[in-house]
Amino acid sequence: MFQPARLKLWKQRFLCKACHQTFVAKTSLVQKHCFISNPIKTHIALELQTIQSMKAIGDRVAVSSHTVMRVLKTVGETLELNHQSLPEHLSFDEFKSVKEAAGAMSFIFSNARTHEVMDIIENRQQGELIAYFQRFSYALRSQVKTVTIDMYSPYMTVIETCFPNAKLIIDRFHIVQHLNRSLNRLRIEVMNTHRYSRPKDYRKLKKQWKLVLKNSWKVNFDTFMTHRLYEGMVSQRMMVNYLLSFDEQFDWVYTLVNDLKYSLSVGNSTQFLYTKQRTAA
Image (cartoon, rainbow, N blue to C red; front, side, top):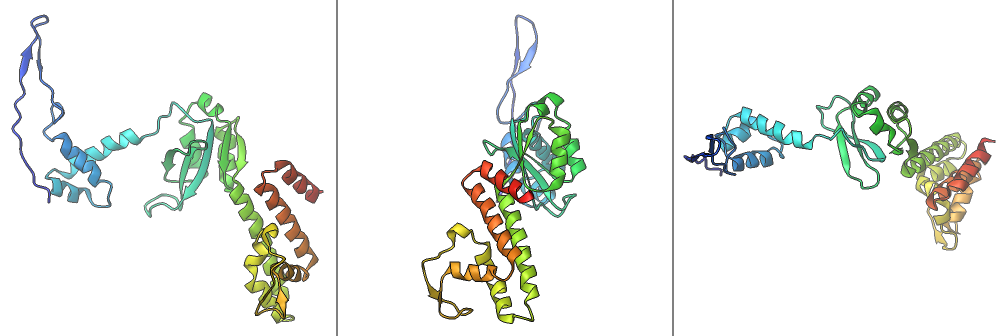
């Protein structure tokens, strides 16, 4: 339990014989013209880390809620981002914030090389982000070389507007996620076409979605086992081939998606672009 204590502090006044001006001795215990000690302010700052009202903190340390608010503002000023510098490589992302946030998601950006969090913005909407980054000078924004993002489309407009020389980098994780979603969407379409005509195959496609989305180079082909949906001994490769035999487009998309994912896994951007261009042609 916090026990308030009152200290009667006497400050000695000195006279400078050279300029004939007086000055008061300084102490680290309390700031000049202030009656609340620095240890109390430090304790208030620590209390502010937890979710509780300012009045509750003030009652606990025997100060007013306005004092707690002033400490909060003082501590917050030290956390404000310096708008005089920007790293050359940035990363954008979003996360679910508190209920009081203006947008459904909050925005966070960091140094892509050091992973140091630069700042957190309450609203990730396009207009809010453009207004925020335009606080930095045009010269600073022009020095940004790359910005790594997911596939949230408003970020692309923000980058084009605020960072004229930055190259856009799509995070590899989100590319793979997008490919898997496309393949899974097609699996569901094929599955639904066999729902009443071939119910057993419908169940195979429905139950084995993880096997379809598994990277093809990791699918086992030499270990045989029994499976309740199949007769006899089967391997993972045999089950995948059977599922792909239901539809030619499904088989083609499966091969394409896995070729793209393999190029990403080994870092072969040339092969990835070649596969993409060959498909478009």
